[in-house]
Image 1 (cartoon, rainbow, N blue to C red):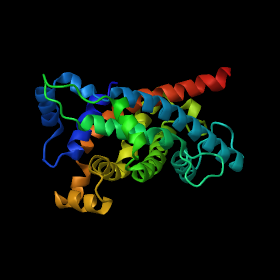
Image 2: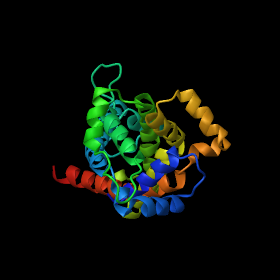
Image 3: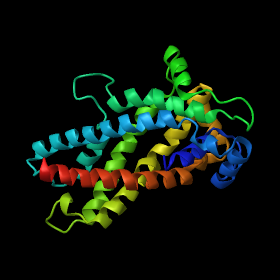
Length: 269
């Protein structure tokens, strides 16, 4: 809930063809549609966050434990960097044999699409209300889910760098010869910030293409050329600053809870 208005502004910036900063975009939305519009589609995001978050962290731990067994490591030792990246990338893969099994994205893709379409609606103050997220979800189920492959690629790469960035920084704040459970709270704070940045640095260009695709349903190559024509490579990072601000804010809370809950669970359960 804390970061949702920033995500709303980010989506509007991604689908807009105007060169407009985040602050100006936010002010424009509030003036034309009211402050409450910044929370339009929040219900779908809350459902997606609860489902996705629980799956991502649980699956990451399961993948990580497989590498620990393979390496004959103790439970809290740090994995080699490439294994941490793979654990993050495949954190949402179904453990059973399957061709497409990405658990988190199976649940998250429709809800992500709902969120984008809900945020796209521009409803002037005093006019009719916006179409609700669950009405949009119903229409999507009847039709199709756009951008699913792009979201899977984004999350596969993003989650890999997310957990890798967190592990690298957390290891830096861990005294030599000790494990991640001995990292300081300051280390958890900075590793949370690093994870939030790591997810988006590589995945953001894919995200902006995905958002445009879900809104317009145009050909992906056409969308890519269109974005590039608006200002070169940097056009693929439109709205990047506000996305990083939101990601850092959200992950400071999320990873602090994750790391400290993990420590309590291993100590008492």
